[in-house]
Length: 276
Image (cartoon, rainbow, N blue to C red; front, side, top):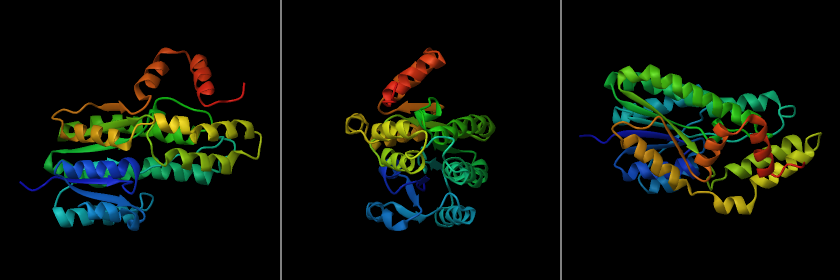
């Protein structure tokens, strides 16, 4: 039997890198995609096939899918992991940046699903894994655009799961909690750029400090926790629809379901150190 083929986006670091290595260890032929192929050299040395892909460029995505199909003839697993956090007050973040956040975190994932689904339907099997976040279930101040993308991807995944089920295709949502990656520093940089000079400066300074907190970083789970979960999901005969894992994921989601909105507002505000 030929090896199954997996495509992992955002594979140059963090969760994507760990996932590519995990699926390779499970016997998949793995394509690791990133905008900068030079950042995939270490993965290539370990047997991952590097693929230049920009998830905001349709031609780039189509070319990547065409390459995989021409080389292996199949795509069994799509892991939509590419994404970033664009933090800043809703009033401050330029709409161009907000649109780009949606292009990367939502439309890129959906477009790749559109491109692989015909091939999965023809084989009547396949798995689409969308990496969302606990940020698709809870909210934090100054993270509105980011949370909007993750809430959207959660809903789109639910709809796709129902649509794809008759064709033997599974759709799985992965909801990471705190993970030790570059994500927090990037979100803090975006936040400081957009909101530290205006009316939201006090909040922005507090949230940026929380995003960069060494104490939080020490508590965060390694990316391998998410990679192991994805490996479990794609090899399961009947995977769960959702996997919440990583530091704080399950407790925070449970708390959101229990507390009234204003009580949860207070919990989150204190957690990120907002001034009272």
